[in-house]
Length: 294
Picture (cartoon, rainbow, N blue to C red):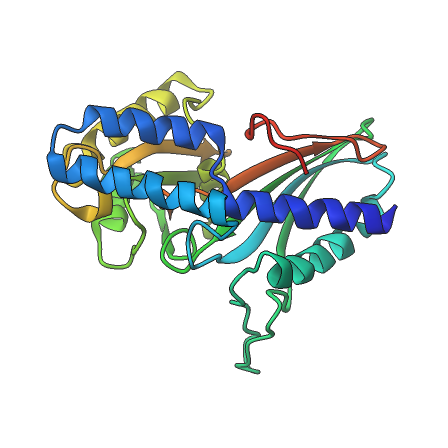
């Protein structure tokens, strides 16, 4: 079963780096239709041409295949739970050669590229356990150096108020530290500490297009920030246009009475977020890739 699991994950990695998820593609098509600038329409056409060639030639749709991040919702009765981390590391090594993925992993202090996209705590794996379940859902995200690896977190004082969140987000998204290719997916984490907010910001980027925060005020803040970012006059590739962002997603947690933590993680238009659901027999579903098979 271990070899079957590894081979399945190798193919899943290849799918996720070659093809954008259906909801992202649909959103990009909507955005192209909404642009009235010939330059913006040409840029979107080049995006779609690049994606089509990636699928046809079996090549990654962005040369920076990033570092693989796995976000796992694991049933405690899933039979391969104890070997999942090992399987994912082996699958990343194999996919680096077979896809191929660009080797990006460097261990701190050694300062030598490992050559296979594995390193200390890489691939990055984040776990959530689901009691009384024998299934597993794995969300894979390729974090590139120009998009979601840069970001920023800050802890505000309660006296700063929630009003401090919006200018902080705008400064991060429009500042020189973000090198992502617009239109962007902006993930915002609101919590109690820098590390808590940073994780929530990354998970916010992984939400499906068209979904909203569960709280009405959170959903309203998402809409307001999206409208504000899209009024900056920036479009695809940062050139003049009407839409800087395709989505703004907020994830939140409870906070300390004395802290308001905010983090921002930004993804580019090549939003390589794949999802696979496995049952106890390793039968699978690919909910964001209609018609795909591994």
